[in-house]
Length: 263
Length: 322
Image (cartoon, rainbow over all chains, first blue to last red; front, side, top):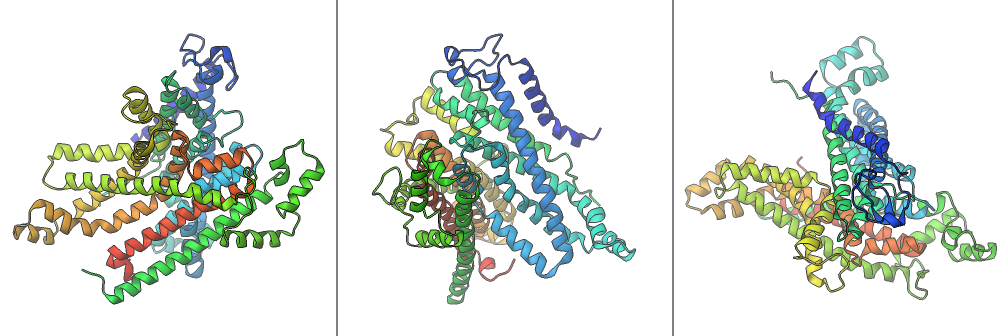
């Protein structure tokens, strides 16, 4: 097995821990048991309780799963939309290439967090779907820019010219010869986009614009800050979860990254 | 090389191009805010008044917010209001203009962000200079590089609460979140927290750039002429890496502004983030719209200033050479 696959190990461990946590937890995530507020770890509640007696293990496992699913979904949408767009623009050249490049500049200079604040403020109950839509609106741009730059050097490569000379149409050249060669660099971007989504979602939930049931990593951090003096473990568990999730995704992005071979 | 009059014209051209782009981004952001409040599911007037409100009250509010006008007219009115800094009165505090509230919250956020940028740049450049010059051994240099990578990879949302717990709750060396007596100490601590990721990014870039030019001939000449290491690195090497440093600061501004909102919430400090959350919870639509657009504009203006500064310090940018 190639050592590259080891890059995915932290993410697999994290997803496994989240699944195991959900199975081990005795309570529904986010259910309030005021009499157990800030209770310490026990056999029934291995991580103890948070504010209003929520089972911390159930909460963190569910929040972790939600954050991972959102991050991967947004990353894949950005990848699927941005990579072919950037590659196609570089193959077409001329005004289309310049237009896509300028649009990427504009979108990448857009404050996504502020836009997310606006959109989530405008809806009755912020949900992960809305958060995902906002992040997806700008997630495609870094993929498109990377694909554009990479395709500029690929478009004059001999194998691309040979494919065109052998009668392969522009769509075939794009999908069969150019895009597969972009997967390595796009996968690294996929990891950093997904990690940024985890951090963005946690930040939004921390400031009060998370899912209404409070099941999010930012919600755990919010509880941790309010119970900082009474039960610091809630804060530490929340911080560790955000760090591990974003780090695991960043690391996993390197699975498909191929180091150039020395010649 | 000092900028000449021709360089001045080129810098002005870079600023004009940047301002044009900034205007476009600002217009796009304002349009998104406008669209979000009008096109997303749910009637904004019903959102403000709640489900129990009578139809008469809802229709009155719709008229007050001009929601009964055609969309194009509403959009023009919204843009005109932004230009004139008049988006109507705050719902929460009748008689106070929404933009007056926004401007009062803008100052603390600008103070926090500016101090964080200054501290982050000073911290990153200072450590990178110390590690690149002859003052530290190879082991320390490796340690500095690893420290930069570690701090840059820890999200602020995970790092800031833990550091606050350690320093404020355990060691009691900084004020606790929400302490009304925190004053300048609170601002300084929040700025230091906000500056840490920025400082690490700046440090990584500065360290890489300084290592690259460390063996350049002009530095050898300066050393051969008897210049002390401080002069060699500060006066000769540092100006050459100012471009990448300014670029990385500009690219981190979005994260910095998001971080400022998070830290305002963490420390219960007054600022744009707190205002947005207050306006959100009380459904104060005019303030919400104004605050979000102001936050976006702050980001856009800071980015444009960053580009202008980059053009001023790097002759390759102002001459259009890539």
